[in-house]
Image (cartoon, rainbow, N blue to C red; front, side, top):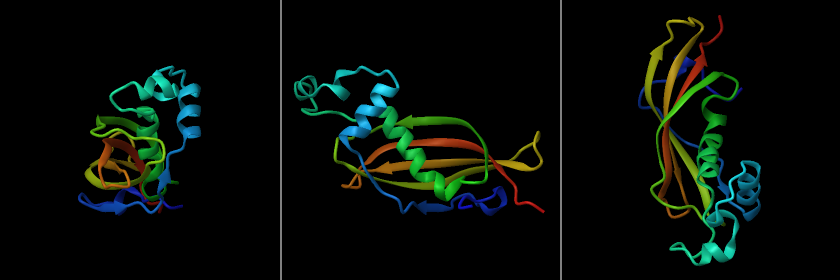
Length: 150
């Protein structure tokens, strides 16, 4: 188990996640097709070339999913009860094919669970950066996390 239990977190804890990921054309195309997103900016090279971006723009929902995925191993792997919600999702810069992503997390809040004494609520502030250290996505993720057994 790589994730942390509720009482192992402190507000302000920071993690620079080790796993990095270069976004490929296959990632973007498969994600767009699997989610029935026909946006030409994501799947049509000619339409994307004619846009203000001048090339294919990576599907934003893939970018968001990658941000959360890169964080899971260090945050909630094996300790998650359920994700309760995502807030303040922003994408200040575009992601392009070939960009290499890395993620960082800071603990924004901790709260006891009234309905589940065996768990607590952790609010993670996740940020995704490209190879130029530009923030390309950030959000708050609220999760119900197990307490340490025994």
